[in-house]
Amino acid sequence: QVQVVDSGGGLVQAGGSLRLSCAASGRTFSSYAMGWFRQAPGKEREFVARISWRGGSTYYADSVKGRFTISRDNAKNTVSLQMNSLKPEDTAVYYCNAVIGERPRYDSWGQGTQVTVSS
Image 1 (tube, rainbow, N blue to C red):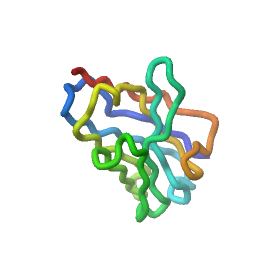
Image 2: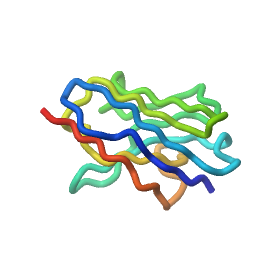
Image 3: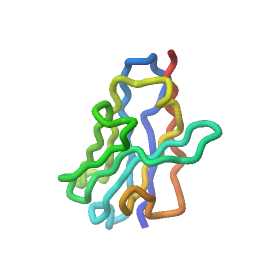
Image 4: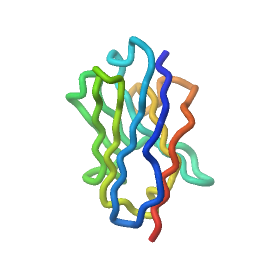
Protein backbone atom coordinates (compact mmCIF):
# COMPACT_ATOMS: atom_id res chain seq x y z
CA GLN A 1 0.00 0.00 0.00
CA VAL A 2 1.13 3.55 -0.75
CA GLN A 3 1.17 6.00 2.14
CA VAL A 4 1.30 9.72 1.47
CA VAL A 5 2.12 13.07 3.07
CA ASP A 6 0.48 16.09 1.42
CA SER A 7 2.00 19.57 1.62
CA GLY A 8 2.23 22.96 -0.08
CA GLY A 9 -1.13 24.49 0.68
CA GLY A 10 -1.67 28.02 1.92
CA LEU A 11 -3.60 31.26 1.58
CA VAL A 12 -3.49 32.99 -1.80
CA GLN A 13 -5.47 35.69 -3.56
CA ALA A 14 -7.66 34.89 -6.53
CA GLY A 15 -5.57 34.64 -9.66
CA GLY A 16 -2.55 33.43 -7.75
CA SER A 17 -0.68 30.13 -7.84
CA LEU A 18 0.29 27.33 -5.49
CA ARG A 19 2.19 24.09 -5.93
CA LEU A 20 1.14 21.09 -3.90
CA SER A 21 3.37 18.10 -3.25
CA CYS A 22 2.64 14.55 -2.22
CA ALA A 23 5.48 12.45 -0.81
CA ALA A 24 4.66 8.78 -1.09
CA SER A 25 6.20 5.78 0.60
CA GLY A 26 6.19 2.22 -0.63
CA ARG A 27 8.23 0.44 -3.23
CA THR A 28 5.17 0.05 -5.44
CA PHE A 29 4.58 3.80 -5.85
CA SER A 30 5.82 3.87 -9.42
CA SER A 31 3.43 1.03 -10.33
CA TYR A 32 0.29 3.04 -9.58
CA ALA A 33 -1.57 5.85 -11.24
CA MET A 34 -1.83 8.71 -8.76
CA GLY A 35 -4.36 11.46 -8.33
CA TRP A 36 -5.41 14.53 -6.41
CA PHE A 37 -8.77 15.03 -4.75
CA ARG A 38 -10.25 17.91 -2.78
CA GLN A 39 -12.94 18.44 -0.20
CA ALA A 40 -14.56 21.80 0.40
CA PRO A 41 -16.46 22.55 3.62
CA GLY A 42 -19.84 20.85 3.62
CA LYS A 43 -19.15 19.01 0.39
CA GLU A 44 -18.06 15.53 -0.55
CA ARG A 45 -14.52 14.82 -1.64
CA GLU A 46 -14.15 15.17 -5.40
CA PHE A 47 -11.67 14.12 -8.04
CA VAL A 48 -9.31 16.81 -9.36
CA ALA A 49 -6.62 15.20 -11.52
CA ARG A 50 -4.80 11.95 -12.19
CA ILE A 51 -1.54 10.84 -13.80
CA SER A 52 -0.57 7.45 -15.16
CA TRP A 53 2.13 5.36 -13.52
CA ARG A 54 4.75 6.47 -16.04
CA GLY A 55 3.49 10.02 -16.16
CA GLY A 56 2.67 9.98 -19.85
CA SER A 57 -1.08 10.40 -19.47
CA THR A 58 -3.01 12.93 -17.43
CA TYR A 59 -6.70 13.69 -16.92
CA TYR A 60 -8.44 16.60 -15.21
CA ALA A 61 -11.82 17.50 -13.85
CA ASP A 62 -13.52 20.07 -16.05
CA SER A 63 -13.44 22.60 -13.22
CA VAL A 64 -9.62 22.73 -13.20
CA LYS A 65 -8.74 21.90 -16.80
CA GLY A 66 -6.33 24.44 -18.27
CA ARG A 67 -5.42 25.84 -14.84
CA PHE A 68 -3.95 22.86 -12.95
CA THR A 69 -1.10 20.57 -13.99
CA ILE A 70 -0.30 17.24 -12.35
CA SER A 71 3.16 15.70 -12.57
CA ARG A 72 5.21 12.99 -10.88
CA ASP A 73 8.80 12.03 -10.20
CA ASN A 74 9.05 8.29 -9.67
CA ALA A 75 12.71 8.54 -8.67
CA LYS A 76 11.68 10.72 -5.73
CA ASN A 77 8.28 9.11 -5.08
CA THR A 78 6.51 12.43 -5.40
CA VAL A 79 3.41 13.75 -7.14
CA SER A 80 2.84 17.46 -7.63
CA LEU A 81 -0.10 19.67 -8.53
CA GLN A 82 0.67 23.08 -9.98
CA MET A 83 -2.36 25.30 -9.54
CA ASN A 84 -2.59 28.56 -11.48
CA SER A 85 -5.33 31.15 -11.89
CA LEU A 86 -6.82 30.07 -8.59
CA LYS A 87 -10.43 30.88 -7.82
CA PRO A 88 -12.27 31.15 -4.49
CA GLU A 89 -14.16 27.97 -5.42
CA ASP A 90 -10.84 26.09 -5.40
CA THR A 91 -10.75 26.53 -1.62
CA ALA A 92 -10.62 23.05 -0.09
CA VAL A 93 -8.42 20.50 1.62
CA TYR A 94 -6.43 18.71 -1.06
CA TYR A 95 -5.40 15.05 -0.83
CA CYS A 96 -3.44 12.68 -3.01
CA ASN A 97 -4.02 8.96 -3.32
CA ALA A 98 -3.34 6.15 -5.72
CA VAL A 99 -6.24 5.95 -8.15
CA ILE A 100 -8.27 3.58 -10.25
CA GLY A 101 -9.78 5.77 -12.91
CA GLU A 102 -11.18 8.77 -11.08
CA ARG A 103 -11.65 6.93 -7.79
CA PRO A 104 -9.21 6.50 -4.92
CA ARG A 105 -7.54 3.13 -4.75
CA TYR A 106 -7.28 3.15 -0.95
CA ASP A 107 -9.76 4.05 1.77
CA SER A 108 -7.04 5.60 3.92
CA TRP A 109 -5.91 9.20 3.28
CA GLY A 110 -3.07 11.43 4.31
CA GLN A 111 -3.65 14.53 6.40
CA GLY A 112 -4.35 16.69 3.37
CA THR A 113 -3.21 20.25 2.79
CA GLN A 114 -5.47 23.30 3.08
CA VAL A 115 -5.79 25.66 0.13
CA THR A 116 -7.63 28.91 0.74
CA VAL A 117 -8.25 31.36 -2.10
CA SER A 118 -9.46 34.82 -1.13
CA SER A 119 -11.50 36.99 -3.47
